[in-house]
Image (cartoon, rainbow, N blue to C red; front, top):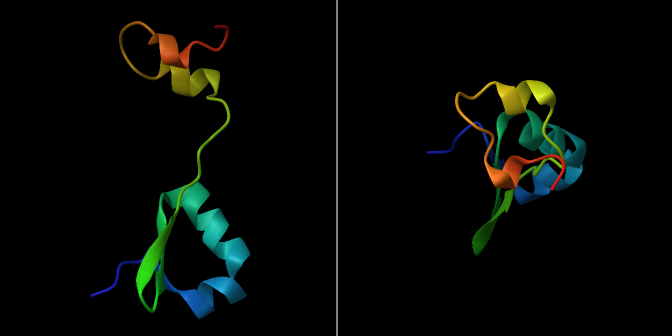
Length: 67
């Protein structure tokens, strides 16, 4: 069974922009190869103020925008 986030390698190579956009918008995308898989994950560089203040409680040190 494959998930919506699974791509065959040949399909992912032909549609790389869609793979990257999906990783950014919906989370990790898995590229299935003949002997394994690749996980493509987007890691944001910075969090928006909305993201920082959307959680209750103090901002953890690792989320501090001004270390």
